Structures are given as C-alpha cells and as structure tokens.
Length: 394
Ligand code: GDP
Ligand code: MN
Image (tube, rainbow, N blue to C red; front, side, top):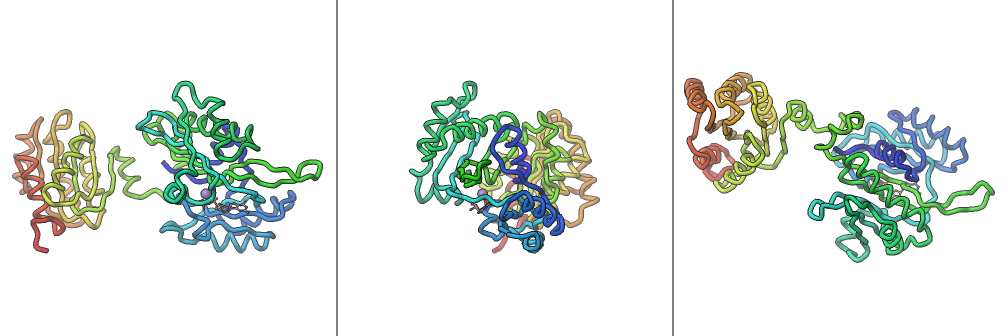
C-alpha cells in the first residue's frame, strides 16, 4: 500500500527523524490559512506540494513556492485539481520553504533476494534514482542491514562518508538507523527520502546553521503485513485506489490487472500462474492474474466475474478450478448466477476438476456453458474465442 507524503512524514517523525513541520489543505483558502500561520512564524516563503501517489511531482509543476498568503492561495488553487500522471490532485501539503544547500538521496528497501534491508544512498539527490542508476551507477552507495543485528554504527558511518556527508556524520547515522527502524516498525517495504537535504537555517543566536532534514518522504507498506498494523489502514487513500483493487480486496480475491484479452478465474496462486502460462503457450494474452482462494463460495465467484468483466479489454474468459476445499458445484452455481447478472456477453470456457466435478459438469451442461476436460483444451478454446488470440482471424 502506497501512502501520501504527509502520512509517510508522520511515520518518520514517530521514529524520531528530522522532518520539518507541515499542514495538509484540501482547498485554496485552507492552504492560505496554513501559509499565514507559517509566515507569521518567521518563514520567508512556503512550499506547496501536490499530494498524489506518484513521483516526479516537482517536474510536473506540483511543487511550488509562495512568498505571501495571497500567493499561497493562488498557487494552491492552481495545484488543486491539476492532473499529475492521470491522477487529480485533491490535497496539498503546505510547509515552510527550506533554503536548500544540497540535495541527497537515501532509501531503505526490502531486498528479498538477500533477505535483508538494503540501504541506498547518493549525493545525487532530488532527481529520480533510476536516472542516477542508469547514468552514474557509481554514485549510488549500498549497504545491507542484518535482519537481527540491524544496521551497525560503523556501517551507517561508512555510508555517510561514502555519500559525502562526513560533515553531517551524526545526523546521517541517525537518519539511516531511523529508516531501518521505520521499515521494521511498520513492516514497510520501501522508505525513501528524496531529497534528504542540507538546509540553511537561522539559529537562536541569529547565526546561520546547516542542518540535515527529510524534505520528501515515500513509504510503501507491505500489504501482507497490514493485519499486524490495523491503525495504518486509515492511511489508505480511497481517492487513489483503483476501484477494481478495492473490490478485490473487499471480496478477499487476489487480483492483478494485466494487459491481455483473456480473463482468468482460478483458485490457487500456483494454478493461476500455470493457467496464465498455458494461455500464453496457446497464443493468447492473459488479462489478469486472479486467485479466488480456497473454499470459494458462489458470491465470491460472482464478484470475481464482475472484476474480470469490468476490464473492457476482456473478450474471453477462462475458468479453471481445482476442487479441493473448493466444491465444483458451488463454483458452477456461482458462474450461473454471475452470468445471469452479467452486463455484457463474453464467451467463457470452464474447466472444473476435483471435488464435486461431476455435479458441476451437470449444472454447467444444463446451463449450456462451454466446458473443457483438460487445461490445454480450455486454454486453446479460450484463445480461439478471443479476438486477440491466435485462433481468431487478424
Ligand atoms: P517529487 O518531485 O515528487 O519527488 O517532490 P519533492 O518533494 O522531492 O520536490 C521536488 C523538488 O522540489 C526537490 O527536489 C527540491 O528541489 C524542490 N523542493 C521541495 N521542497 C522544497 C523547499 O522546501 N524549498 C525549496 N527551495 N525547494 C524545494
Ligand atoms: Mn522527491
């Protein structure tokens, strides 16, 4: 689950990381009020940032500075409602504008292959890290944190020096350790600070000081671990969740949208992947990965069918069920019910084997469904029925 910058910053703050304060506004007047408070506090300018779950907001014009409350209101008004990479901006973050001396990059990701947390740092901050990786891979410093021992101090110091942050050693070590803590505390699979910035501030005595702060934050939470953190569920942004993803989540169905034309309804993740492979081998392209799970009842089958048909590219459906805990006749009832409610007519091929397969076959035959005995046959029939398939005239 991706969360908004403001929420990511709250998680970082809770772990003791240096994050400058902010407010969130949903309207231009709200942004004005926030800006008035910040400017009254002594800031010269405010920064106004679109809150959308995509990167590159700066380049898209979604991050702008304002020097007065009037200007803040106008800028917020321009950013709210803006379209950034297909997403409409509905809220903005307002904060005191930082006086940036230099931008760095620091992130922690779950490195599944190494089974460790990988820290990546670079002195080339502010730009997308993929671009740095492509153009100047040597400018990226990496370090693994042991899952039990954690990030050792010497490792964090090494990282700081190699990032060119030796002058801010203590702060960098603290931030690097804080990123690892944030990963573990919330079961995140990404915590990214870009930019981590040296900023110029005025100290209590009026003298200029330089400080290292997290100016942007991106956190992705591990969906599978969310049940361990029910309080984080409130950070889900309904404005930006794909309606299909939301329906799948509520129905307890694993659903991943793909680019093909053949909708697949399968029980079991392994069988779903095998089904996708066989569709491809038969010359077709799967429209999705869909696992209705074990013991799927008729209503879940109907929900899965709605999900598949909501994709306008789907022009053929392959149902492949292995009855174990899942009973074939339950699935057949679900399919019959789903077809009765179906909004558009799409050819469907059904293969059901295992528990109550005979009862399922009878039901399906009575309802005049196209069935297949083997998975190869089912895949071939579905591909032939699809306009995007090899069996169809081009
Ligand atoms: P992103 O483009 O979505 O990653 O949004 P960021 O929050 O990273 O902002 C993009 C860029 O805007 C940063 O790399 C900075 O150069 C600039 N920026 C962001 N916040 C401030 C700020 O408070 N002051 C100044 N001067 N520039 C900022
Ligand atoms: Mn950024």
